[in-house]
Image (tube, rainbow, N blue to C red; front, side, top):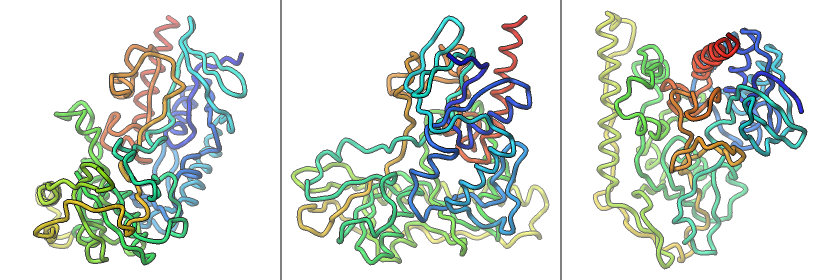
Length: 414
């Protein structure tokens, strides 16, 4: 049995940021990682993926991007090098190649069992991320057996797909990127669209992420959100990181020849059924985008900075067919593969502590796990701030939670 003050499960950006905060407070700890540092970035992403955030926004406690392309977007090898470099700079005590098999309560805190021995600790941090498992709707079970079914965690590039048409289900960042890439390979593509968040890549000459950063949108604390559960389920922005800094929205995909249909509502007798709400979903996304642009324009004017930026403008509304397709016969041979870009969820299958709600989500207050003393969770959407799930957001969350952890240790020692 090994003893330490804190066990951190996961050595991605969240775990590493927390490690830095604990080291700065002289709190002994260990990070347990099933693979190598940044394992998910290494093994569970498609080949062409780039960050949605500009390089300058890759910031961790005491560490930041220093390359010559601050407005570019890191590809996966660059992200891995960035996080590996951070682990080396801070001297993170990572136990790589170590799989957690169970976590349970003990009289002194927690027992973390792994395939390489057990750890005993009074404080515990779950930093294994929010994207361990792909969400696949139950309707997928009704797919005709002749159609290949995969998730973005299995997809690598179009060369690995069956010849023929592809239906991508989901139109957040992942779905639109995969739809565009598959279409560029020459395959027919159908994109099933539900709720989505449309934004431009550039506005008034600046990256939309720059605007969201400087206006404080990304720093909004969880305590100021009217409907926090809703905020934590909002889809990711429709963005792609390219050297052209291109906007990728439904209009751009239509121009590429991709057929846009409504949300996949059901599968019956080999026929896909699509919701008739596509027009309303697109109108709502356009409305929310324009509200964001209005808030940016107001910030510019309120701060007397109109002369620094290009004039304000608005983008063409999303084009929707007058009568979008409502059904598709999946047995006619035109669709060979369905890609379920329907989101992700964390994997806590090894956590044997009763901290879950009825939907299997960890109950927490800004990362402080309820009903489990001195247990913390990191890296979830809107954990403490809107930016919590981004590389740029984990540092502030780690600082706050490390302060809470440290205060608890001092109280216990008093």
